[in-house]
Length: 405
Image (cartoon, rainbow, N blue to C red; front, side, top):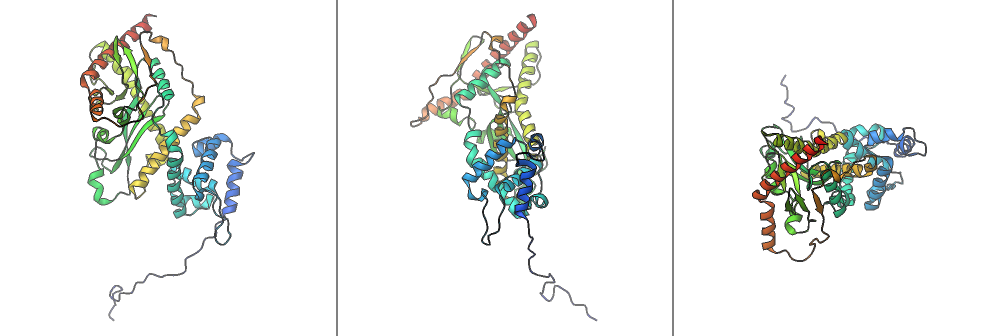
């Protein structure tokens, strides 16, 4: 008997049938969620809420209410049959669970009664809403008051005129297009990644976030595409007049690794310090440089989705998730700032002083000659060397004064 090939007939053996409709109890899931976390006397205390959703209840409700005003999808609406849909609490809770734990979308159905496709859609819209509603406030450049506080804190640490520390972090991209493998893969990582460049202060606030450069680049290539110094080149950044070791400066700097260029805007490490002064400076610089690494660690701990490989297909979706996590991280830092107390004592360095002039150029046409002049000042290697020598002397005198007293 001749066996007929199942592919020769051109007829598929796949069986088609009616799609099974799953009757999810959206109203019951909403009531259970309210009883567990949002009632007057919830089942789980505030401490467990903060552990599971990474923020205080009042901040979470603020996000839910703001997103409801931003987009109608984050409101409770019945469908065409009159059935109650998902509530804003369910949608935002599902998005936060995926961000906080890296939970697969289909794992939320049992408790929140939300399907896989709907959960992924909620995550994308939640990220869009966070960026649109809160991005301008929590992913902004430091204001005059912010900058004054940062300078005061860093002055008390023995690093005058320091604006923060800068570094890059790689996020592994699992669902990348295969044709992009070479563009997004670097030898020391071995897997496709996307780079986040960030600048952070001691309180773990991320003041600058630039995400989306392919992982095959290094930190210097990312810097060449970054908008970090755009405000300084346009003359719109608050100027910082400072005197250290008898020399005057009018530009802040970031602590950076050895790969960064010797610009006036960076203060690099001393790779192999030989003298006692250089060792003290290297210890001080490397200790403060860990601020941005601590910020990366806290960001990955709060949002496990950033620590695990990204399972999203679209590059823009991955970028929105990262920026939303950074904004939420800054919101949590600002919300809990009153719990952290930082002692500031400017009397430790009586010879140093700073001033922030109120005049900032925020309007008018940019003169190309002025931009070139600011760029030359920013890229000045001579000023970088002079500032490093002055800081070495300043930190050495501060160290000897403390030990003598």
